[in-house]
Picture 1 (cartoon, rainbow, N blue to C red):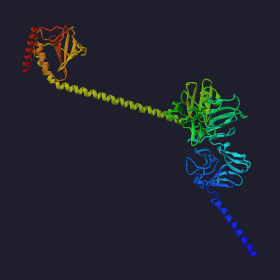
Picture 2: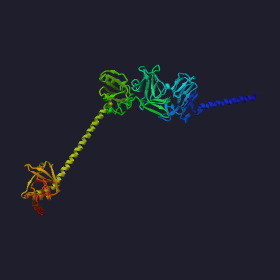
Picture 3: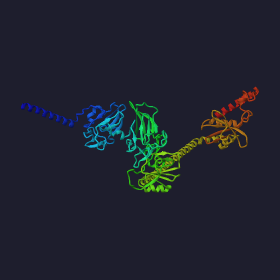
Picture 4: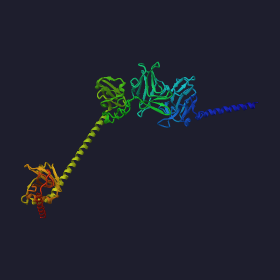
Amino acid sequence: MFPAVDSDMGTRRIARFLGSICVVFCFVFEVCNGNSQHVGRLYPGFQGSRMNWIDVGGVFLVSNRSTFSFGFKPTSDDATLFSLVVIHVASSTVVWTANRGAPVQISDRFMFDVGGNAYLEDRGSVAWKAETDGEAAAAIELQDSGNLALVRADGSPIWQSFSHPTDTLLSGQEFSAGMRLVSDPTSSNLSYFLELESGDLALYSGFRTPQRYWTLGAESRKTVNKVGGEVASAALDANSWKFFGRGGTLLWQFVFQVSAGPNITSALVLGSDGLITFSYLASSAVESSTRIPSSPCGTPEPCEPYNVCSGDNKCRCPPGLAQHNCKTGISVASYPCRGATELVEAGAGLDYFALRYVAPSMRTDLRGCKEACLRNCSCLALFFRNNSQECFMFDQIGSFQESGDQSSTLSYVKVSASLVTHGVAKSQGRIIYVVLIALATVIIIAGLIYGAFSFNRVKQKADDESIAPEAVEEDKFLDGLSGMPTRFSYKDLELATDNFSTKLGQGGFGSVYKGKLSDGSQVAVKKLEGIGQGKKEFRSEVCIIGSIRHVHLVKLRGFCTEGTHRLLAYEYMANGSLEQWIFKNRRGSVIDWDTRQDLYFTEEILQRGRKNLLAY
């Protein structure tokens, strides 16, 4: 009997020991949960890291209809770091993040301990925790609406993600006072946020002092359902964003989509650009074209700070800061004042988004406004309205906007005095540089002109010298002939022909121009073209025609031999050429045969005389 009892007791002790070993093994090596996904709910005692569900993309909980999932997702910046997120499964859209801005490693665990507390570990510390005010949760529930909730035993929520949104709102998710929607930060670490306060919904920039840049009350695209009343909450439905009063009365709605199915999940996202966008989540996220604000320049920083945004979303530096490359030399973090500063007028016709929503800092004249800003270390820019004497001072600004009014609002930016001094010196250096370049250009051009003139003069002198012996010989020859016609200067014939303006014809050795001598008689001036060309013909014509007087021969009135110029001045034939009379003149008649015979013999005599002279 006793040995049998001892045997049973030994068996039970061994079983308890092995069970304890299994429990320890589960906690140490984290294999109790396996990699199976949970559906609908998690219960106290759950724990695990990304490594446990690496085969299913880090997801350990899905909603009942698998519309949304909850688990670990790599960050966009570093694939080795992870965020704990709720995801719309079909479109792979992240709609909520637990540890935003505090990613964890692959071995860090999400814990839902036996005390009903949900939190995310980060190398021994806590990266995120659901604040339940000490109340233990009976379960974690992921609903098909996308809401993640810690619930009591009766299913009522203790804590829910819909009450703690990140940058996204979903259909049916109520947004009320005390809640804040925050965008992802920009590269310059600027974030935007949406809040409901004083009965109005407003968008803000996350500057040192937040600046409002949109309000629902000023939105012209909303539909008014009831006049009056303050907004107490807002919620998305299929195709519109609805705003309710304290009693649940619908006050306004903002339609962002023409039509959508009743079971469509809509999403509102506040982006890192400061714009609110709308989309509906199906197999992918289909985005609406509607934006808040509607203007591409309506957000605080569509361009870099101190740049001007125009209507087509183009950016430029204002004239007052152009020489400083839109830099002020003052850091927003340099507070209190460090070093001397000056105010520089940014430019005319500039506006700023926050002026519509902020009260003026004071009422004074422009001088008083500038002095107040210079005395205030936190003042980095000011705007002054001439018509109302309102002075607005800001400790940080984004982009300017273009304004149609060139004189109503003046804008000044505080810059470092050293930057202004450097800019003046740099500007003076540029002026000197430009002057030197201009002077060098003038000298080079003058040198080229002088060189060309000198070359032409030397060439002309060489040409004159090369023809000088021939010209002297020719002058001696012509002067030695008896009965020579008048010798004209080149200037005389140039004046007579009005600078050779009326051309009568052109032959093998030159052109013929009509002229009028100082005595009023008309002449035909033949101008030989080219030095050395037609010299024999020129001599023969001067010698023969100049010495012969015949009724049928045109009279040579004179000639010119000056430098390279060779010209003959004939008596002008007012009745036309011989050709016209031999064949057909202007009156339709021709000369008789006796006259033609006389002309032939005259020409024969002239040709013989010319040949004899050339032979001589």
